[in-house]
Each structure stands twice: as structure tokens, then as C-alpha cells.
Image (cartoon, rainbow, N blue to C red; front, side, top):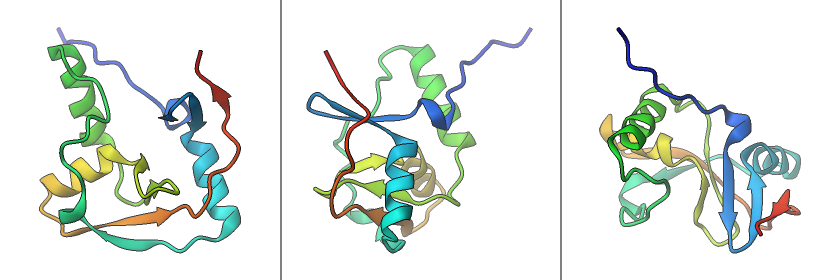
Length: 119
């Protein structure tokens, strides 16, 4: 019998900064509308001490591993206006595991209005 593993869609991905929350789709659409260039981001400059997602249980770890395995490197990572990864940590993990030197990235020069505020 297979062990069920949860899935997460792109539409569910969010970026949290302070009490502001953006949907990943909001960030991508904003970057596209602003026509920000897609650049090659060297992977050696990524802060590997960041804790972008929770994986304190085996179930959470397996879920995150599946997301890394299933993600596509065809889509660029989105950096916020401070240069932090707002969307794309799973792609960064996959690129590093595959031995790549760079990953496609878009740097936002400004942030769109947030989608909601955390309580």
C-alpha cells in the first residue's frame, strides 16, 4: 500500500514578510507586468542558513522533498525588493542537488500591494 503524500499547488504558495502576505501568483504577474528581466542568479550566493519551510517531522520532510522533486526549473525564482527569495526555494534546492551553477531569477524593484495581512 502506498503512503499518501500531500500536494501543494502553485496557487497555494505564499510569501510572508512581517505581517504582509503575497500569493506567488501575485508576484509573478507583477513581475511580468513590470517587464523585469530574467537573470542568471549564481547559486553560490544563496544563503543556505535560511529556513524557508518547516520540516521538523518526517512527514513534513517527505512533503518538502516531493515538492523539490516535482518542481520545474523552467520558472524563474522571484526575489523581493530586498533581494530575498520570495518564491522558489524548492527550485533552488533542486538546482543545487542537480549540480547547477545558476538559476533563472527575477528581482522585484518594488513590491505590489500585499494580498492580505496576517493576524
